[in-house]
Amino acid sequence: MAWTTLQLEILQTTSRVSSVFSLLGAGFIIITFCASASFHKPINRLAFFAAFGNILTNVATITSRKGIEHGTQSALCKIQAVFIQWFMPADALFCLAMALNVYLTVFKKYTTKRLRDLELTYILTCYGLPAIPAVIFLFIKNDEGIYIYGSATLWCWISNEWQFLRIAAFYGPVWIILGVTIIIYILAGRVIFRLRGSLRNFAGKSPAEPPVKGTWSTQSHSISRTMSPDLTPGPTASINPPPSYTVTIESGPKPPAVNNRRPRNTAVEANTAAWAYCRCAMLFFLALLITWLPSSVNRIYGLIYPNATHFGLNFTAALVLPCQGFWNGLIYIVTTLPACKEFCRNLWKHLRRPFHMIIRWRRARRSMSSKASSMTSLQPV
Image (cartoon, rainbow, N blue to C red):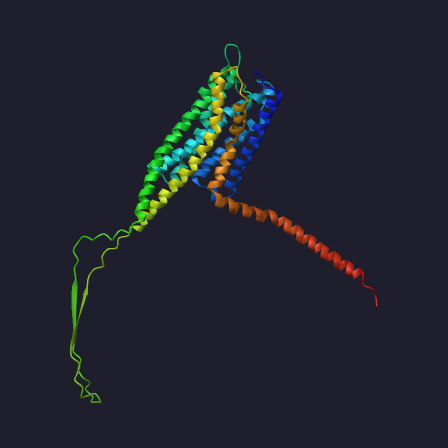
């Protein structure tokens, strides 16, 4: 069944609208990260690096069917196909990098500095691995002379004649990445929740001070003094003199203080940081599921029924696939909400300053005009 012109227009408009929202999300990540150090958290740094791939993906998706209309062998179609094959899977790889950071934090006790040292490796891997098939596919064609890149209904990508590669070289690896990611989150989540429960129970108790082993030594000192009456007689001379007295002072070493508060606080802080990172990374993972699940169903349907078309599945794919940057930007805002509020307040202060200057200038001009008119209205006496 062939596509109607109206259906193709709807698919094209949908992919472009989704791409605009994605560009806004990725742009917000890049601008705020560069403008304020408050956003420089490990999870945000990976989102920042992934945002550039989101933008290049949206350059391809916002072009939509223009590449096909220019011809499947045109430069526009080839570039569009390379960008989609290259940068869409890179977002899933960055999600795996976030999961690896969770694993290293929970199981290997990596610090923020050690995680930052891995960033260059993450960038080269996440952008380097998808680049290999994306470039190689430019030069491969079958016995009939049909190249891998061609029309894929929504945009230029792997053509219908090479449909098996859509699963083997795109959706298959992405789902393997997502599978490894969810396994890491399950393993890390079990440890984190177990630690949180143990620390919560420990914090609710007030353990008695542990006994101190060892021998205490006690020293005794006696002080004796005899009070004698004043040699000078006076009114109280007849009173008997005070008796002598003895004071005994005992002292021993102060028992060593046991301070369990600092180790407990350190453990709680480390556990809280790991849980916050895991929670944020899991949100990025859920966004990937929303992005990839409908489009994967669409491609599997096309593989099973190569001569059939399904408008609903293609519409859903056109809606969710370009939205990677939008979801990343939304999660970025939610997880850094205080920093976002502060950034917006500072931005508003800078934006309204020129308006205040214009208002003051207009008021000063109006005041000068009124003074000038009052001077001209004066009549000589």
